Length: 91
Length: 420
Image (cartoon, rainbow over all chains, first blue to last red; front, side, top):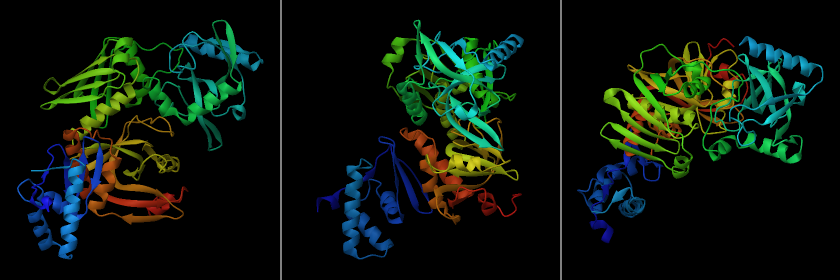
């Protein structure tokens, strides 16, 4: 899959802060607020432009307890979603 | 003042004798319904006959004010009225039927009388009471001037403490400051100002037209410039000054709230959509969107001090947080005192059929808190700082989800050692 080779990077204008491993993401461009759970927050933290989606999926598999297929599908979908919303940039 | 008092007592005397009185509109707080120099026909009426949407004349601090009725309620066997100018964002301080002089029954413009008991005028009045904020915006922002007959003091500066920040407001004309004093005078302070807000009046119909929908915040290092429909603002924090070129007479309540919302975030605090009540020298803050019960909680406070029923300032104080009153209020009416108390607990309101208080984890509190904060999150710098302040608050202050019934029992429920 093409998505697996992408190195997603957080948009520099996005404001975010984590409390107890759960983040609030604020997009100043449309003033929308996204509350993330722990898994989403971890994906967001890993999306630093240095790791591919495949590497992020591997990291999530190591850290969270779910079937590999579920993690692969959900992480890829989530990252695509964040790219479409302008929160992540493709690298 | 003596002349005004004599005038009012003569007016009351005439009304008592069953006569109608003519008076002239001064000021523009009732635009577009009433215009300057319109002649109003005033009639004596009983409190029961005054309805929501009616325009009444009442005594305020030795002067007369003509504003529209938005609500009436009885408290401790006294009839209270809540009024506001059609062109104002802020409500007036509630007053009793003893202050009411009469009701406007007709308006004379260009030599012709229009009677306000006509269906169209009544519908307009009722509609405005429901869409007050919308109407204030449509008519070019709020005006904080009361349609008054009294003479303002000729002062060109006003020192206010807003959100714990002492500010000196300075203008090139006394009338501008007098209008601000009318709305924010309760928040005057003797404290040394941290910042000067220097207003220059450049009223211009063309600027108002050009700037109609403008909103632009631009940062230059730690300073910013701000373009709004009614003003251009430049900060120079090194000189502790904010320069404001005012293009309109209106919008200043909103402007001050906006400026305070930025300044307070820089100081580690924030403005919160919340009501605040002081019980036993500690502040309880109740956050939530419109209709969540903020004003209801303020009304149930009995003798407890109210910080606001709409906007509470959360101020960083060494390691803890204070909840401070603000002059930005909702239906409850004007807040009479500038004061702040240690913030004991924060509640996120949910209306329910029973009382329930659910403690929130810092992460839950953080996620509930941020959307209730008044921050311009369309600016990355402010959004980032506001998020940081919210996170630190959520980690420090006990927060709860509060399901409540709108009864005075709420204070027994919240605080076992309450004096109720």
